[in-house]
Image (tube, rainbow, N blue to C red; front, side, top):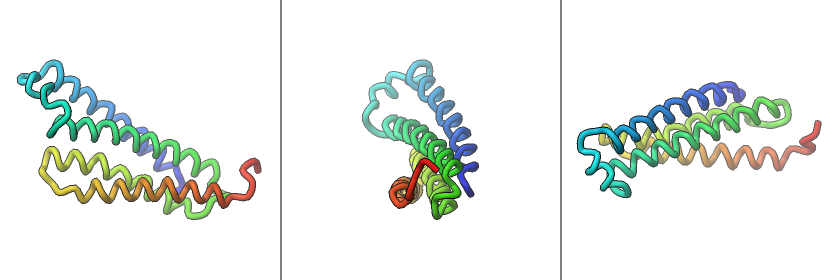
Length: 136
């Protein structure tokens, strides 16, 4: 993995989480029982699904950015594959939120994804600090 997968999967997952936003709009505005859904705005499944939607798009965007940077600087950065893999693993966080909401699974995927994405961002930042000259 050198960043290409981050770009491709980042765009694909962003598209899916954007489409998921349409489901949330349907539940808010058109679904039977929409009043109950709207009234649970800051609690329960409604809150969790919005968290998944927002974090899914954020983590997709981070993968696009990380993928671009890894491709652009791959010859001058170390551990490109590890950073790439961690960023992709980060997508488990919003997926984990959805598996909690819809299947009642424990939050293990949420924690794994959050830790992986945080690690990839910090590792990439440290890698850029160690890089001697960015203008080569």
